[in-house]
Length: 347
Image (cartoon, rainbow, N blue to C red; front, side, top):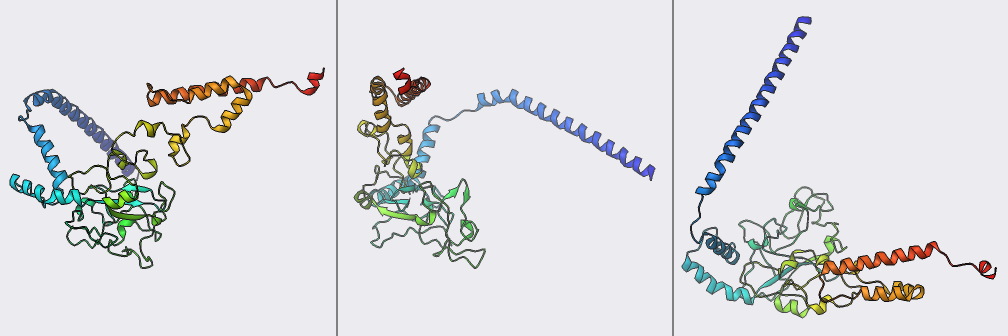
């Protein structure tokens, strides 16, 4: 038995030595390969050339994909077919664009759907029927999926937690449910239909939200932004960069760029974004306290809360922050020297 144990120990030592030698050899080969690559890379880059107009060709292709989308079936149109497609489809698209959003019961568009936004059926919005020669009169408007054999009858948005789908109350994920009408679970028989208690950023549960498909006229009647007319396919509710943010974070509802000066200088109310309320000027109660304690401090704070036309946002917020620090420091110093009591005054 002792000889058998010694043999096992010897084999283990040999195997460990072989493993270490292999690791060293691997590291050496990697270092040599990296060195060869670094030496050859400049020469490769010198020999790598692009034909004149290559960048413009890439831009043209991206423009083509934004306009045509999935309508070419994966095979590029010829220049003649492309021009014919634009003459036939673009007027209809500009006139009958559909705006798709995921709306809270409070009226906030918590999610504005774009071409790449996935549906409950896992296919993206651009893979659904988004162009109509005549807008249907039935409401809600159905936007069926065009992928072969997909039972999805109309686009239905479902939120994600990062990249993971949310769970139903039956404990199964959204993609484990059928995209057919009713959204029944494929994993269990007790589920009566997808129903998630996931809470949106607006504070409302997911099941209280609704996927809305509406026309430009319907959105304008509600005072909601419609952006500019664009020829691109499946734009949904996107009207600008701010449309990519969640509804409760969207400061600029129009999505067409920076708000006007009148909008920026308007007084902050309780209906404004929490970010604006956090950085607003001193409250009325604070101003009243300042007026009672020190008139000079009140005047300074009121002047500090006024925005100067030549300063940018960061300078404005920094100036307000420094003014607030000075006020707090002055209040602390007054707290260290309390007013004399009546007894001390009589003495």
